[in-house]
Amino acid sequence: MTTPPSPLPGLLIAAVMVTSGPSLAGDCFLDPPCTGTPEGEPCDEVSPDTTNGGCLVTPSVFGTLEFGEVICGTNWANGGMRDTDWYLLPESPTGPLWVLVELRAEAPSMAFLLTLGDDGALCTGFAPTAGTPAVSGACAETTELGNYVLEHGVNYALIVTTGDGQTGIFDGFPCPDGAATTNAYEAQVCLAPITIPNPYDLNGNCTVDFGDILVALAHWGACPTTEGVTIELRAEADTVAFLARMSAGGVCPVTGLADGVFAYSGDCDSDHILGTGYVLPPGDYAVVVGTGTAAGGGLLDGFPCPDGSTTNNAYEVSLFTTPVPLPCPWDLNDNNDVDFADILLIIANWQSECWIGCP
Ligand SMILES: [Ca+2]
Ligand SMILES: [Ca+2]
Ligand SMILES: [Ca+2]
Ligand SMILES: [Ca+2]
Image (cartoon, rainbow, N blue to C red; front, top):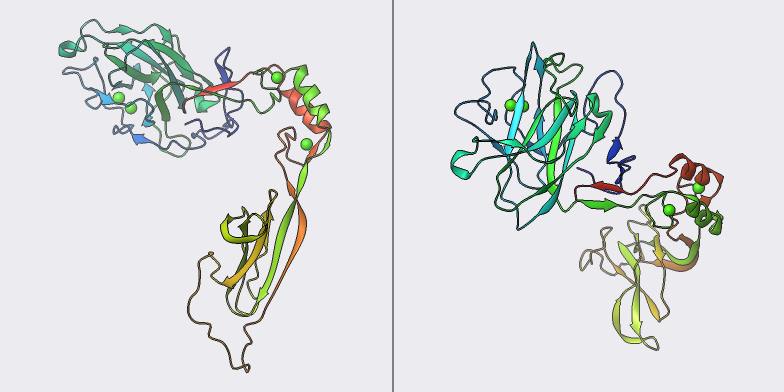
């Protein structure tokens, strides 16, 4: 659910506090919406919960969740009752093993792990697993990640329910009519959480600090470019032109195609596409021109040599150089300039650390 390098603003590794994505004022919907495995329980305020009420119903009933699987569910709290969703986790690999719980929710919600009984009696003596619950504020305005250490050979369940991380919430979040909120949540438990680089941490020490300002100053000014080759092609027949890498001395055989975009022209130039972005390592290259399609495929039929009355199958090809941008990680606002605006962004993210998320 956390796919770098999307902003994930402020998932802090140290404090584990997260200032999550878009703040949802007014109507309350997960943004972006949850995409994953549906929970399979409607938001219907029906009790007893025979879908995934876990050990709170008899007989006990669980949903299931693989490590790394994203579950899309709903919950509610109304009239002194609340929905609880219990998901059995698969057996942990040989551990101990650190896992991360991620939760985004529209109603204020928490997700935490319970340690269950042995296989024959999962609900015998179940108890909270030592660790930090994941908490999501209403409308996912803030999210706190949870983390746990799991032991091999122990049964665990993920619980998602309304609450603030410390106590449950049993009122105030009835099942909605869908107009203002859907009471949706998104949860997952992942193995091997990853550290996501912080783009404002220019020197890679996982803290945004004065060292990053020095790095920006060292790259001050226009973002770097290199010289690239562009092919211009105009043709009467459907034609492509590209660069082939030749053997040393410019002789055959061809050893590959140069990296870049082929040029295409056809139908008397009505859909002329420049070939750009060839940044050529030292070597010998040949321009290759042949009949081909706009998708880059070859064309072996349909364009016989003409009688001169309707077409000559002529083409015109030329090469010129153009600047090609090089990576510019110091330009934080993408204006192709390392400038004062980038310094301000570093300051705005001062002392933020690297982010952590599920792979
Ligand atoms: Ca539910
Ligand atoms: Ca439920
Ligand atoms: Ca830094
Ligand atoms: Ca900039």
